[in-house]
Image: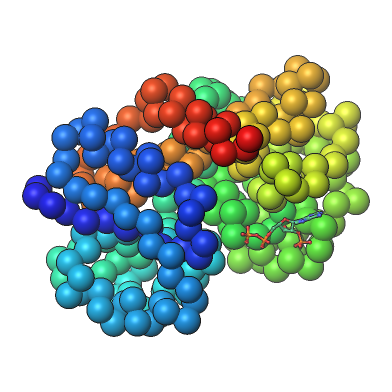
Length: 278
Ligand code: ATR
């Protein structure tokens, strides 16, 4: 394992915490490899892939806004990427460049890690939002046998997303009170509540007691949603672990080792998030 090279491509890419995270694991495991952020504009994707084989990459991550755009440029996608309709990880299988998606894994692993037993007797989840993150989360939850209600400001987007998955229904926000009363898990899969964005305005009073509440937003770590859920006695899980676990599974595709989501790594990321919010 000498001098392997991995990248993350996005546009912009300066905000990405992936270089810090993968750099930590490479050092911890003593692997001789680099992880490089690449700012690639949408118009430059074809050129990037035209030179891909000669560039000698071991693999890479793909982030916003390229998760769908890379698909025509690679040799195959795996079942997760097909179900989610987006790719976040690229690796070689023999001589073929494969695109996969570790976001569903990351979401589920975060819940399993931070709220062990959360799924005991859990049957129904409510996911707010109908963008790319929701597709990954719905894929993860349905894969574990949950039935899922997707609620979105634009009801039509929720309905068309739901139509692509078995056991999923699509709703407008007006249905939320009734849905929350039956929910064992509530997920915010929008960017609302992130620093600089408006808060997610949801009345948690109807939420089933014992429901677990989680958020994909991790800056701030404790969003308004998680704060009010905790205040009502719900178990909560912040979004940072989804980032960490999707990265860990991507790392495994390149290097064959699933690295640990250590407390030290979490602290390192939190410190960086705190620093950049000032
Ligand atoms: P991505 O695909 O990256 O996940 P997205 O497609 O922009 O992001 O999705 C963001 C989600 O946040 C959507 O569900 C969006 O609702 P709409 O489909 O109605 O646009 C939701 N969202 C964003 N801003 C919102 C707001 N101010 N109020 C309610 N929902 C909002």
